[in-house]
Image (cartoon, rainbow, N blue to C red):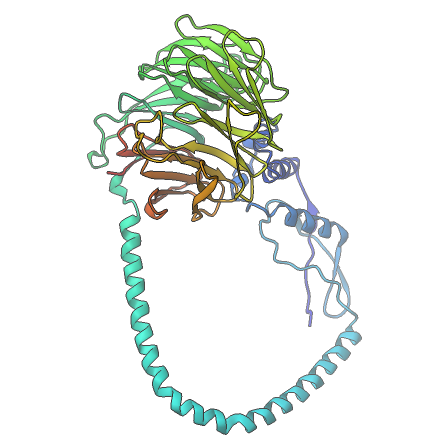
Length: 534
């Protein structure tokens, strides 16, 4: 019985097309390409940029299908059979949830005949149901009499138990939720904050944002109860030739003694600052955005990886380039030192190269991933190298084998990042077992025993992709941050949630301070939160 329905003429702007392309790249697993397209196509500065977060993940195909349907219908039938022209426009992107169902109604007489037949069938069914009900009525009444008393008693008991369980659950959740008096909110950035990291020696926190700045926050004398504003040093990355162009600060890293902070940005320039905010070096050899920076263990060399497919080692005593490594065929996504002279790099070309200063070819090349390799990390001993990819797997490699020694396959979507626990040989906690954490676009975090290739914990409370994980310095807890705005702190012992916090934006990165009593998280709403976890 269709009374009437309305079909809207479809209109779509170039900004909306760009946003759909961005979502296509993101949902297909091309996360770095999506990041570049989002900024280079000016989606980030369009009037609908905020919808990049609001559009539900996995709904792109639905929007496109509905858009195609809308282009095929330009009129709608009224109840009297007449046609009425559409006048209201339809935006493919801005109409997030389309509740209209496109159907083609039959003629008026055909609908009336169908209605009459339907009514006759319903009358016949009603007669049959009434006859059956009368036959069984007496039997049912007798059985119900004997059961009523038992049911009433059980219902009363069950209700009491359920109420008790609910009260216990509420009390337990209240204990886990991090209260406002445990959180310091750092405000000052004007755009998303992509990364944050604690100074290894002082209570200084560095953050990098899409507003062309990094900041150093001094938290040495600040508590939530003090109510004081947290001072920060602003490290300006503004383009010298175009003051209107925003430059994302994509990566940063403190050196081992906390005296220097390196930052990498979308303009392809690496900058080195003192912990007081003085610009010490401006490193300009790269020709494309820098996505990753790492100091070596001694703190005298800085390693950078770029979309220009290269990695560079810089001498920080002089600020000069020592060597440029040009082995990848596509953008370099991550780098990590093995020791003071050897490092590994990974790329969208699905390869991992292990390189050494002074040598003009890789000392080892690992092949085995079937898609972009997003991150690599050496374990604390420098014996094992972990990698994760958009091919849904994490893999473990060592220098004595030409292929991976472990293949970790439990995730159902691409793995964004991995972290080793600060435990096992070569760590500060040598008597504890070594674990690997992997965070995925399937909304889960998994913990692996790499010796047996088994998943020992499957942490699945997040409802959106997980972009960051971090172990506490003692290796007993793991924190995870997701674009569902939630931060969870998990017990490594049994996988239970110890603490929870929900912010006002998606979480890009999290970091523990060296003593393990504070945890920082940076958000898409331009804030950084520091949480007291003592």
